[in-house]
Length: 376
Image 1 (cartoon, helix red, strand yellow):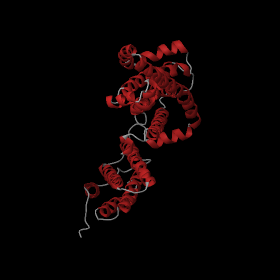
Image 2 (cartoon, rainbow, N blue to C red; image 1 turned 90 degrees about the horizontal axis):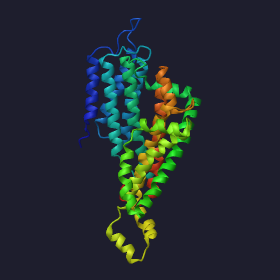
Image 3 (tube, rainbow, N blue to C red; image 1 turned 120 degrees about the vertical axis):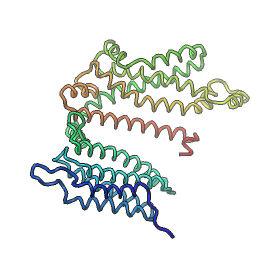
Image 4 (cartoon, rainbow, N blue to C red; image 1 turned 45 degrees about the horizontal axis):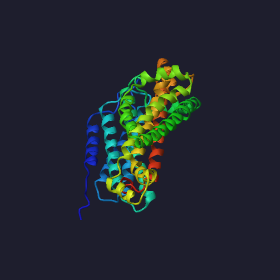
């Protein structure tokens, strides 16, 4: 049996290793005239080329993924560690080896994605590992590019510097998160989505309201935040209440439009069946139409989870106490503390992802009967 099964990622990674050998040194000479980390170049080449060669033979998927994972990430770590202190001196072989390691990680993700397990826990672990590796390589390439090319810190700091700033600024970040997310975002999100849902039920019950509200909803959804936020600050003051008002405006109409659309999603045959059982409006609503509208409602909740965070942060640019994520971003940009700006952005992205993930988990639990969930 032929045990040789090369993938194009492994072949290309091996060829990039050969090209890096023929291209000279990894980095330019430093002030002492010594080429940085040239002593570990053989280890880096061995890791990448060895993992690529192992991947070309028929072995178990788990073993192949493990070899690729170790080879790709250890090689990338050695490359980035070696360029520290001599940023901006990287030459073509440095980028060739980073690209080779990235190809091995790509192959690792492809192998992991092809694995089929009978265990629910193992399947869930694989669904978490694959995007984690993908996201990690965005940071690795970012780190390698900024350090290798010597990109000025003011333009784009490396992720490692942002991580250090996050660790050193935890009390400030915690206060900003409390002000923006746990006050403005959560309050505005709950009120906006709840009000949009209730008004959608009323609009469904009263046809002339549906015909009048939906066009207005589409118009209000197009209003720019930068036009609404200053008005809300003048009306409700500089504290979190004005930011919550912006969030309510941003989340109300998406929920209204999606809920009204979802309530119309149930078929005529199902409605006729409910009428044959002598069901009134409210029985039909709770037992047929709201379950059919659940995917639409949860879509609105997921969309609003990100809109709410964006709205609150932008609203803080137009007046806020000396705390808050938007306040911190605007002030630290003026002070040229770009790493702090990126730290706030990273925390906001993490909070938004967690918020979205929680809503998605609730959706899976509440709509387990839906084909999109049953087939997942």
